[in-house]
Structure formats: C-alpha cells, structure tokens
Image 1 (cartoon, rainbow, N blue to C red):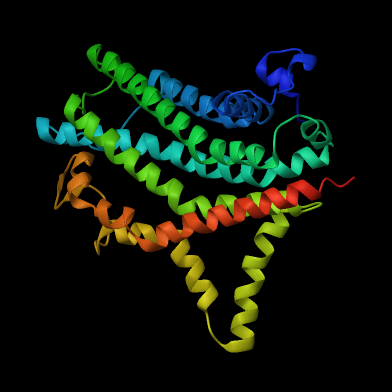
Image 2: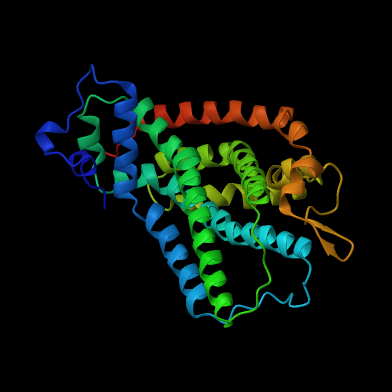
Length: 314
C-alpha cells in the first residue's frame, strides 16, 4: 500500500508539496526516499539475509570442504572466494527484488489510486519515473553491495573469533590488498550488470505502467509465445537466440572466450582479484550492444513516462 510523500520525507502532508524552485537533487532524494518507504522489501530483504549470515557464522557448523588447505597462499585465495560467494547471494537477491520492484512500482500506484495524489504534486512524470529507475539500477544495487561487504566482514570476524577458541578450523587468511581487489572486481561486474540489464528493467516498468491487471503475466507472455509462433510460422529461432544473448551475452564478452571464470588454476585456487587481469573488462564496457541497450532503455523510459501521463485508470 503506497504511503504519502510526507511520510517518506518525515513531514506533514501540507508541507510535503514540492515547490517549483526546489533543487533537483533534493527532489530526487525525496522521491527515492518515497520509493524505499513504500517498497520496504527493497531494504528489509537484504537485511534479513545479512542477519541470517551472521547467525550462520555464530551458530552454524561452518565447513568449507577445504580442510586440506594449509599454506598461506591457498588460505588467502579461499578468503577472497568465500567473500565472492557470500556477495553472490546478494547479487541473486538483487535480481529478484529489482525485477519485482520494476514490475510493481507503477502498477501499484494505479491499483490503490494513490497516483491521483502524486499527480497533484508539482513533480513531473519524467522526474518520478527517473527516480524509480535510479532506485532500481543505482540506489538498491549499491546499497546491497555495501551491505554485502559489511555482512561478509562480520561473517569473517565471527569465524576468526570462533577459530581462536578452536570451535572451527582456520582455513582463511586476511589480506587487505586482495580484499580491495576483490571489491573492485565485484563492483565493476555490478556496474556492468546494471548497464546490460537496464533495458529489461525499463521494459518491466513500461508493462507496470500499462497493464491494468496481472503485470507479471503481460511481461512474460510475449517472450514465451513469440519464439514459439516464430518457430511454427517461419521455422527460425531468431527471437530465442536474441533472448539467450541478452541474458548472458556480455558475460561471454567479459570472459574473452574462456569456458569459465572461476578463479582456479589446476588444483590450486587463485584470489578473485586476479579476475581484474584475466577478464576483458575493456571489451565488455566498450561493447556496442551494451550501449545500444542503454539507448533502448532511454526510449523505454520515455514510453513509460507517456503511458503514466495518460493512464491513471480514472
């Protein structure tokens, strides 16, 4: 259920109206706070995962399956790999909550008729949808990324304390430089992820603005039916191959022809920071399809703005 802008900003309803001369940055900050207030799962779900990780570190029988690791280099590599694995949980969570948010954020305000209140404020449709896109592609991913770092540090600190009293084996070794290199590798992949999948987020927002009911059905049905009809009518699979490419094409470019990107060499583990040298980040960030997708994102956002302007189901 959508709340009012006053609740999101901590103000009274009468003082919540945004004056025309209000700075753009302050207006955007207020609109983003509104999104986080109305869609609380955006921050409650990551916090729950962080609490679960801490509880596992405190009470769980932590066994990494690598008790044979004895030398410091392997312990250091294991440290970065575990950090990568813990952050992967948050990447998966980000995928689900951002997809759900993009599909729900414009549909919900029409469903409960709160759109009538929001349109009475001196905030344009473009700025409103821009704030929602900013929340989905920047604010939430970066916030979850920072939370994952804090949670992983807490996880390692608790494991270190338990190892000191002998309740768990010591199989990891701390190194600040490798920790920072791992963070940089994960951050670059997060930025690449946001840019590559931005058209999908924008498409879900268009469906959210357009659908009168069942936005999930309307967002998925065309991509299920269209490849089948193409195959039956023309005997081709261009749409199916396009969907596969748009799902993982950038990762193939990033891997630069490698069959896998797991930081392992023979039977020895390598720190995750070595991915900065092994992966083709330059080729991925200069990929023409990446930036064509960004252009498509802008077009879809414009379409969502036009649809929201005229479709309030009144």
